[in-house]
Length: 342
Image 1 (cartoon, rainbow, N blue to C red):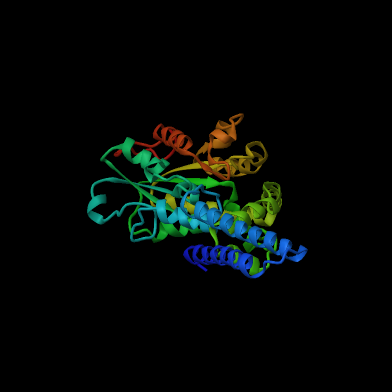
Image 2: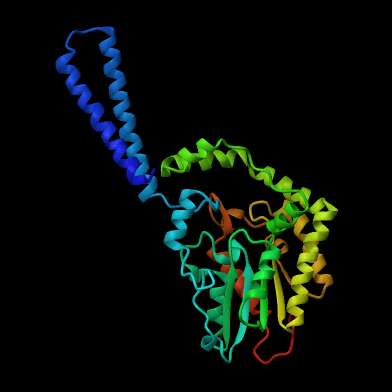
């Protein structure tokens, strides 16, 4: 049922109940305990109907705060309003045709929802767009990202892109290990929910809001962090995941492109997840890759100042800009033969 249908149905219920109250006062005139109970129940039902109508209208038209979930009604509504532009390849980026890239040094900024700019209403505040403005017309900065990608998907997207990069910035997030873990038989288990509950919640913005708030309580951050620790501590999972990273590095090296990797721990559990990302940092550093370790840089910072909002742990505008400034110090100028860190 659509929101419009909910609003119409609730309005009809409220009007019907109100009409029943008026009729009962004329037809059912004899005082009794049952009449008093029925009158109170009718008024209560009418009040609830009106309250639901008001809540539905509020959460449909006024409430719009990103929640970090990719499937909730509010996330999809937010995406329709703000997750644009979309180019012909499906990325949240402008169109980059051959003419616009001709004679420029092409920089790929690759990642998942961190690079896509989840939670940012203005895509121009993302790291890739800040880089594009600061690097100037000699560069073409291409954003290659989608929410939910892991290392394998990011590598595949670069392979498919119809242009060779001169430089690559890979933004690594601690949950990039999850696809490899699932392949190794360690999928992230989520609390079971009856199908009819999801169906009812998905028909109303108000009920959808309540559903995902309760869902967050059931799938707390502690369960997610424990699963990430299990994945990184499993030798088979870690071996498979590092092999994905190694394949990506070798692909960039084969194209003689400059590579920088920005490594993010979980922004609201910095200390706990830095133990995990340290393994990725060591692996890449041993491979000779330039690594910007955000776990070390953000140590001691207040997570509330780093993220988009209370319910969304994606990087906020200030952190996106900070990362761009740090990368500007590392990227080689066009014509410079250096391939690593400065």
